[in-house]
Amino acid sequence: MGLSSEFDTTRFKAVRARLQNAETLPPACYVSQDFYRLEVEKMFSRCWNFFGRVDRVPNPGDYFTVDYMDWSVVIVRGKDGVIRAFSNSCRHRGTRILDGNGNSRAFTCPYHSWVYDLDGRLRSCAGMEGVEQFNRSDYALKQLRLETWGGFIFINFSGDAESLPEYLGDFPEQFASYDCDNLVTVRRIEYDLACNWKVFIENAMEEYHVPHVHQHSISLLTVGDNIIPAIGNWDAIREKHKGTRALLEEDQGKAFPPIKTLVGPPAEGTHFVCLYPSTMLGMTKDCVWYLELQPRGPQNSKLIFGACFPRETVACPDFEERSKYYFKRWSKSIEEDNNISERQQAGLQSRLTVSGRYSLHEQLVHHIANWVLDWVLDEKGQWRLNQSQAH
Image (cartoon, rainbow, N blue to C red; front, side):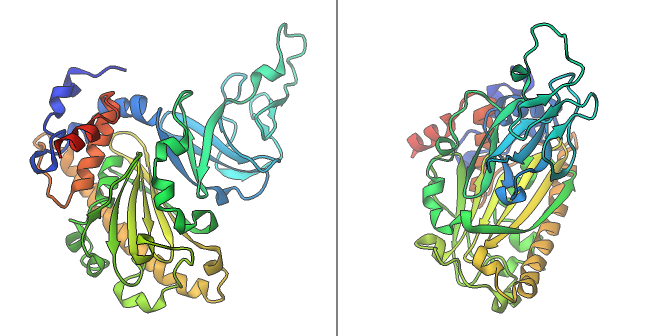
């Protein structure tokens, strides 16, 4: 899918400038069906996409389905314990096979009862007897590339993309001491938002808005924004502070013990990480949470919030009582972020809206815009290279 004249490279010259001189993305990038299609075809179809945690399918036969833009996917743990992802479409005439989540020993298409094993192989297809040159082994469910890091699931829809470790760069090394494989997901909530996916993820990666949008919740917690160098498809803000960023100030006395494996900067505060394209990880001293954005068109998104604690913390006798204070903090701040994101989207829809300028407190918003443009303009990595050369 090629660039239309509305979105040629000259349109983005001001966005590609250094932060001190840069303009924000044109409003059309948040409301246009054409730009959204460019993102789907050139970016989401080629990069590694985040799909929650492996503990959502803890047992053989456990599965869940995802409708992700143009893709209908089923993620399942096989009888061999391996987690796989398949197209949620029967190889006979394309019928959707599964909905929601559950546990099954095999997948049966509701149309003509073709049956698939959990590893995707076609087990039976009654009625196909006598069909010439038909081999069941040729009609397995289409398998997608699925890899994991730290108990998090990533799927790639391209057949020739780099591996997940190559895509993540030095992210696993820098954040290894959080021991994410040992985390347990204790809460998962979905929200339907009337905003473009970029609106929310940009909001999640800047603290300029915190004293204003969160004045009744987490405004007392903010201490500044220190951007750390990143190699790979991620960016992060590092904060050094006492206590945990997962509790309101008045509830700091309810904090759980720190993650016992933390060393270096992770032990000194919090990292707010943007895992491109559309996930934020809040990694603080005692827990990790994620905000996963699934686009639902140019002006709608699904937000999935997940809260994760170390296995030892979840086993504490008072976990249920003390965790309520964490949920209170997240519920308040997420509702505030949801409201302001939808309000921003309403403003972007106006034909009178034009590009603005970045504050120096919005460095990662600028990074996000240019990461997207790198993929959409087929200039992957070029912007960061130009920025490093400029300095």
